[in-house]
Image 1 (cartoon, one colour):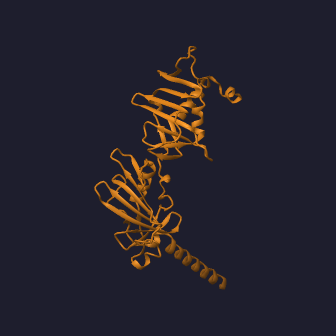
Image 2 (cartoon, one colour; image 1 turned 120 degrees about the horizontal axis):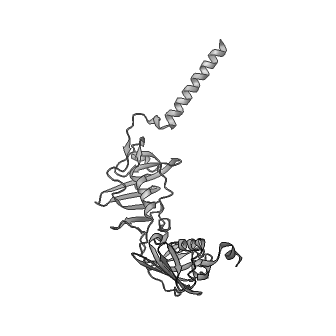
Image 3 (cartoon, rainbow, N blue to C red; image 1 turned 45 degrees about the vertical axis):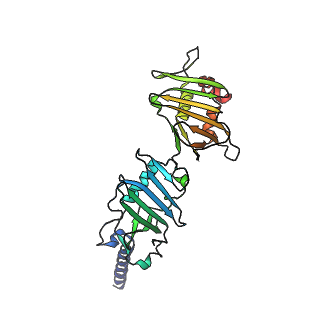
Amino acid sequence: MIRKKINLILLILLICQVLLIAFLYLPSGEKGQPVVELVPGLTAGTVAELSITDVTGKTLSLKKENDGNWLIDDGSPDMFPADAGQIQHIITNLTSLQSQRLVTRTRSSHIRLQVDDKVFVKKIVLKAKDGKTQTLLLGSSSGPQTIHVRPQSTDNVYLARGISTWNLDTHKESWWQKLYVQVDRNRLQELTLKNSHGSFTLRKDGEKWQVSGDESQQEPEPAALDNFLQKVTHIVINSYLGKQYQGKPLDTAVLTLTTDKETVTVNIGPKESGEDDDHIFKSSASPFFATAGSFQIDPLTGMKKEDFYNKGEEKEQQ
């Protein structure tokens, strides 16, 4: 009989403990609180500018052009291209922020939670095309992907899930559009490469490619051709240098890509001295000089037309 009473008491204590944990830690613990839109009146499609200010006061702005491209404005003379996909993902997360977890309504708690007008982890300003603006103060974290958020228009502080401050960087390098040369391979009709080994031209005839001037009319080896076309139609940068460059001539290699709509010329310079051994290069499709790693550029500076006819095993032995 005593044992049954003890077991009953233990069971009651266990139930009380479970209920307490649910009340304190689970979303249902905020019963009765309505869902609050933290960025009302804005949608991802209407935002034309995203500004981020960090704890040091440094601000970076991402601005959408009329053509849909995004540019980075960090106060530097040049506004470099930004990664539109990355920005759109961030803006979608921000404009869809909701919360049922009201933490406090008192202004005296703002500094402690790091959502004060002057003391914050990140300050986010979202501006629509029509000028409508919403400002969020992102503060301390209360768990993985959960932080304190205060819309600047109110003293209310909320817990919001699915957001963090680490990917809201104020360094321009974090937002660069890395894909610098991008040509639709399906529309490519001709390309010419000139380097220290000479020059050659590839022309597309129907669905087949031929090396111009090759009297044998031998078709390029498929794997070698595919590898080469992949390299020349997609080149990723390591860094942007700006619109002006007064270094060595960019004549180590010249690549010309012609589609049914455009012609893009890429001038490649020699390796720069340093740890990375990057090449400086410039595409006619961009106003900016840039650098790319040698693993991307070396195959272009060293390519010969004979390489199209070498089987993979033979090429490895050379």
